[in-house]
Length: 292
Image (cartoon, rainbow, N blue to C red; front, side):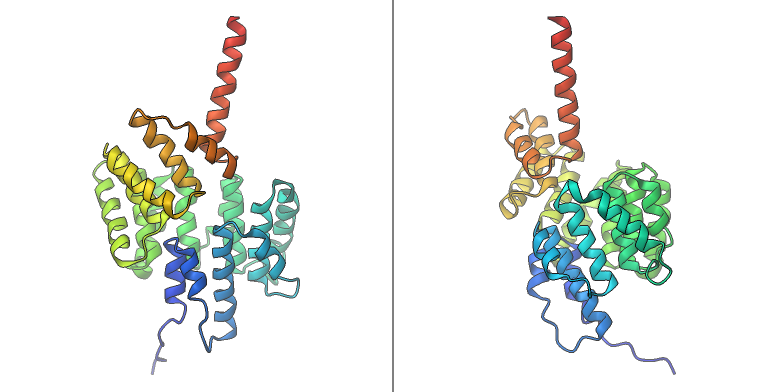
């Protein structure tokens, strides 16, 4: 006789985290009678929520050297994001841990490794640790990595794996929306409906508002996109994706984007849009000097 599986005590907490309701995840984390494994996963989700909110030092100070491997991995992510000076040390530690047979296969460690190497734009190295999958988060990260590599065919294969496991899972729906946005055309409306469904079922977040706004921009509905993005900015004035999308949206509307770009440079100086804008400015300055 098969064992009866009870309700998942972390379901609400996970969903809050997946849709970008990070403070909501933190606020709903007091869950009684968790198993030791569930307690570690809960703590990982809470600390990852703090990281998403930019509270790196809190995570670094609270996770000590005796904490479980998944929590140590989360601390590495906080160290990596807190300062460019930590990058070499963090990546060295990552390689060391991933090579250790005792902990190297831990799914959270592999997830954090994939996240960090994706930040480094070292997609092949990221896939070394994530491609085997094993959890919905790892599959979803694979979809993101393949899309960054412009391999929507591989991303679609990962999505099919997720759909076979749980078609209604929040991460499956999110991955489906990401893929639809990458494919474009008639798929844009399908992506919009996924984000619309999220906005009706869950707490409205910057992640969901940005998803809807990007769909609107793809459809040429820039006024609607701007409304959504300004709402997202009200919720989180430092969210890099909101600021980046406002730069693009403002340009299409013929409005000044300089304030949003300045804010983005301050909060996320390594964002792709900032790097491209800086490169364009340097190229223009060189051209002016050559012509002078």
